[in-house]
Every structure is written in C-alpha cells, then in structure tokens.
Length: 213
Image 1 (cartoon, rainbow, N blue to C red):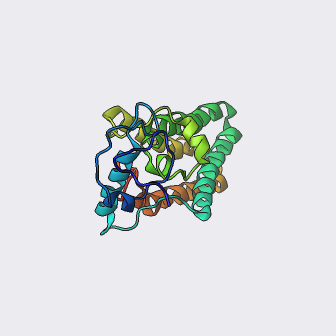
Image 2 (image 1 turned 90 degrees about the vertical axis):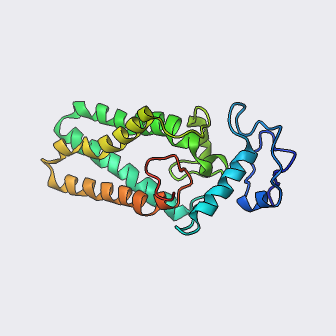
Image 3 (image 1 turned 135 degrees about the vertical axis):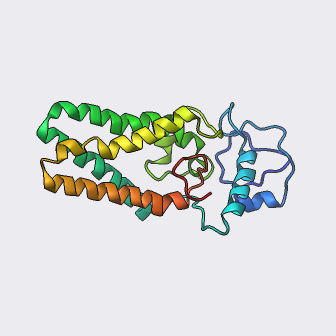
C-alpha cells in the first residue's frame, strides 16, 4: 500500500496517495516540498482529494486514472479531428494548413497542457496518469504545478483554443461534403466524450469544462 501522510511528509515523492489514507491521520504537514519545490505538498494534495471525493458522492465517481479504451477513444477522436481538418484545408489551399496546425498543436501542447489544465491535474501529479499522452510526456510539458483557479485571460485562451479547433476548418471543408461529414463526426465524438463522460469524472475542478463539481 502507498505510504500514509502524517507528521512526516513525503519529500519529492510521486507515490499515489489515496484519500482514505488521510482520514486516519489528519496531522498537518510542516515540512514538505511535494512534487515541485515551489508547488503544493503531496499531503495537501491528499487532503484536497479527500474533499473532492466527499463533494462527488451524490454526483458520480471521480476517476483516478484512465483505462486503455478510454485513452483510445479520446486520443483517436482528437487526432482524427485534427487530421481531417488539416487535410480538408490542404486540399483547397495548403497555405492555411500551417495556421491550423499551430492552433491545433501549439494550442493544446503549448497552451492548454503546458500552462492551463495539466499543471492543475491531480490525475497526472497525484495518480500518475494522463488521458491524452503518456504521463512522462505530460509531466515534461508542464511548466509548473498550479492549484489556483483559472484567471480571466486563462479562461479566454482555453475557450479560444477549443472553439477554433472545430470551427476554423469548416470554411474549407464546405467544398468537400464527405470530409466535412467525417470532420463533424470526429468533432461530435471528441466533444461529446468530454462533456458527457470524461468531464463528469474529472478531478481538475478548476477546468472550465469540468462537470463533476
């Protein structure tokens, strides 16, 4: 079983801390560096997860990690959406593929994952898992751990990225009904999967898409 946080906190540990383990010993953590020298402590994360589980009891089950089929669904639908959009744009005017690629790739990797959602994600930092990428890749992308709510500018960037990804290619896809249908199908697949399933089980309560809290 994973170690239990008590008077002696864990220094630099990536151990999985279950909320149940904190109920037996609620002694405050006086010395801890946690996952990052400037970030919250592992113990604090455990207490926070316990509070989250209490809030969620009447709404559903929070995910700890994600299964193979969950990851396959999320990753396939997201990659298919971006690929179909880029192909549709390229068939009409290849010069607009690069702007879309920047929105799609940098918007997710460089903005959402590096600065917005992943720095606040208990699935990654406490449970050692990630829905979209191998956890090691996601940890490498994260600039610093955060526990604060999204600021107004962060919210704006978050919504901008997730609005532009499905909307930007439509102008070029209108000339190809088959690709447009496939694209809209992948958009519906990914966004419905997020809103109707993943976001209802997500521990990132700061995320604007979260539907669990």
